[in-house]
Length: 426
Figure 1 (cartoon, rainbow, N blue to C red):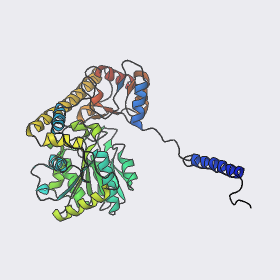
Figure 2 (figure 1 turned 135 degrees about the horizontal axis):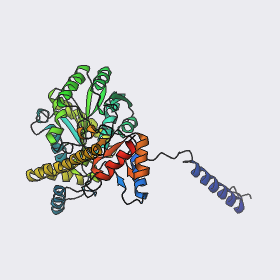
Figure 3 (figure 1 turned 180 degrees about the vertical axis):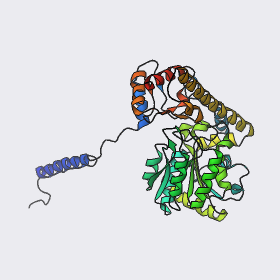
Figure 4 (figure 1 turned 135 degrees about the vertical axis):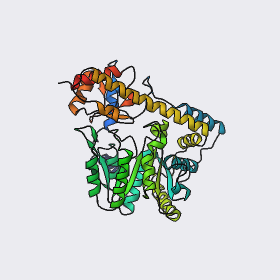
């Protein structure tokens, strides 16, 4: 009688052949995946870390540093952490929208405590994975409900473009900055936004435009608001620097509040990384202003549907820190003062950097360094000059010439200014 499974040796050969084929199959699953390019900022940090030059300087990272060049934790954040630890809170899941108290306080922070749209419950708000997560969530949300494209300023934060592209949107650009004059290209901005098709979403930086640091005046914002409204466009504000830009949180939210007063059903994403120094906690909020309370309820229901299969619910600790501070009058006052201290230090570095460059006899105008606001200075350096700055002077910034003023200190501002003068003099 012949066994249907064959001899023992035959079965072993079959098993061996199958195993080899399986290994080959497994090895080919990922064989067509190409090596991806390094992230510009991460690559910059890696190059800086390998540099052994004692006076090396990193002015490429978008995170605040004290005048000692080290990461800075706000004292009010430390105090809030102590309060949270003493309360011995649990670590249960948050709801899909996140921490409700945080969301409510975040909206008041941006729209104002006496905002009519908040009083009328017209705003749908959720906690997000900082500003980046909020941008992606909104991109997916508007793509789901009929939008195919979004306009962003040129230039804009580098991550804006892939975020919206990965959300399924075509990214279009409107003029924003004139590199020749190192100033806002206001006429170009109005022209391009005015040419946008009705219904288009338009991304606006609420304050401290990244990377240029050049913001419209309040009068210009008013004109932009009327243009956006007359064209039937959807304004979407990215607010990553409220309080950090000028040291005055209501002032930094002025454009948002103006648009709300003008009757826009706008959307807003907030990040609490820069102003509260909570970079690693990923604390943010996304909100949409509806026509009325009923519309806000519908909007919130759809935001929750988008969130659930994405990340289900956000982390709680960072949101608890912000809530603890903004729900306490004294801690809020402390935060305002400490945030202003950060803004004032950066502004003082702007003044010193410009002064030293002008004192060195530079034939360029550096007026834009002190006209700009926020964490970054859009220096106007060319790629070749940025490369020379890195290779000859061990100063690291992004290739577009964006300098993080948080990396400029009283101990290195002379070195940085003289190096910039060396690479830019004719």
